[in-house]
Image (cartoon, rainbow, N blue to C red):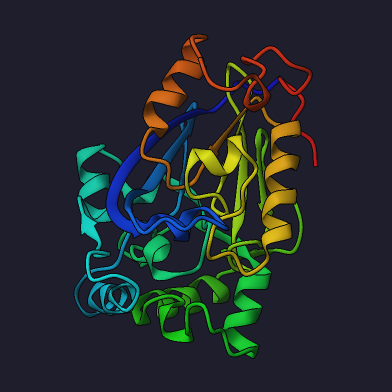
Length: 281
């Protein structure tokens, strides 16, 4: 049996958003903080990431300008670039073997470039790329799908056969399942990881933990029914399900891994369920 993976979420940015964006059907104009994470996955000498951080410069300014049309307070506060994160964690970019992209929008792909990933294979949802290439996305528009530098990076990956598109659940490595989910955007993805305590699921199509616990779709979902279906599916298949931008992720994950998880029982079987050691498609 392969050893389990370890997970470390690192906060790279915070974005205040209106409550109605997080929870469908809520008349809530109060502000909630969404946290944007880069996850570090390790198993032995293997290293992978989930997402690649926020962009900088004009690409970040464009994101903030778009957010300001909803609320002037909705501005990204970037804590660190991906380059700074890798340096702080003492990760050699050449040692990163894979990157799992939960969303092709620049707030998750800002650090995708040759410097940060000279050898990695990048995984993304085909539906998101197909929308970018062949349709006219309205939420958000095309200029928020990858930066110019990331697009150039993708060309190199394609030439070298290091860009992989998933059309359904696929085992990236033993103990890691990457799955296009849709819901928020067509390119939204979920990841299931086998840890020592059980299967941890991470969903981009859920923003905060209340989406998971109460099975309420996000307020800006392109497919609300799909959001709810995916949340319910992950709650059945995982021992812990985490909403992708929940600020309390480190505490929830640490409680789960230590056996002290105190959340809704429907959200976790405390690492001892039938799901443990049984990551399946």
